[in-house]
Image (cartoon, rainbow, N blue to C red; front, side, top):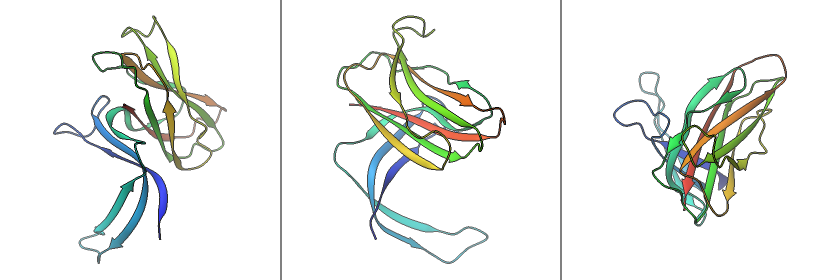
Length: 169
């Protein structure tokens, strides 16, 4: 059975993954999945994925999996220079904050303080009302500095767990 989806592999630098660390994100078809018998409360598994064209690649984590309970702005990531060939932003919703929802965006700026040249690069349609993953294409320029922002709608302040990555082409 083939399954369409978004896959991101987060790589820490000899430590748990952190903001700015490498991530490989892609829009994929899952072609094969298998499990082996449980060993010491661990279930080994294997999966094979095929990339669906040039829809992803190597990028940076704007946030590894993080749990928030209120509006949150991620730390800025400096990628050294602006780029002009576009890219893609990837969102993974790992825990639903019901009944609250969130608007999640990716921002770019020309300075580290995000006070000059601030632009919204991607606005995700997923809002935390369900688990899921989403890829948003970014056309044209991506500034040197990028970050995510999640804005809460509601007052329950329940836990919302997400991860965001950015791939430049």
